[in-house]
Amino acid sequence: MLSGLTLAVLNFRKDRLLRWEIQQRVEDAARTNRQLEEHNLELARAAELAREAKESARRAEQAKGRFLAMASHDLRQPLQAVSLLNGTLQRMVKDPQIKQALGRQDEAIGSMSQLLNALLEDDPDVRNATRMLLATEGYAVVTAASLAEARQRLHESGGTDLLVTDFHLAAGETGVEVISRLREESGTTLKAVLLTGDSSSAVRDLAQDPDLRLVSKPVQAEAFLEIVREQLAG
Image (tube, rainbow, N blue to C red; front, side, top):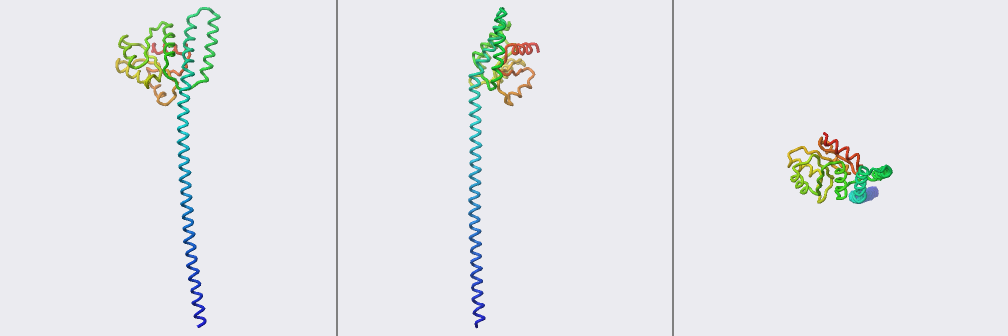
């Protein structure tokens, strides 16, 4: 009897110990599962923070680009006008000392130009300075501020040998659109000079056009006139 009782007690204790071990393992598994869930949540939060940081950086880069484009317009458009007007004066004056002073001023303008490299847009001052420079060289120049005005001028004049335009124009128009439409309406491969500070791939692809010359702004008067002569002679 004693041996049977002892065996029963031992079996009872062994069974209770086994149940306790099973319960511990279940609790450990549940605890591990909770830890995994918490870890997954932390990973998800980290991924979301990384996505938000990336998006914030993208917006900041866009804002920076818009700011630089606006600053470029304010700083470089007057510089472009001054450069062209200075070239016009160099061709008009005869006094050697004045010519020398204008030459030094042209060098200073060139140095300033090297400090600025951003997008440029159409500007009346630049357009008028370009007209004056070309007129000084003996070219007959007709100016226009928009595609509609350019079409009207082209119709009134009966045609043109060369189109000079900025890439960015008013009211969201582009020089590329103007060139394309005027070529289409005239039925010719109208030669053109496109002035731009835009270095995007869309602009670089335009270099494939044999009748189009891309010119980075600001450009000095002599270099600009040389490009005009080459386009007209080609």
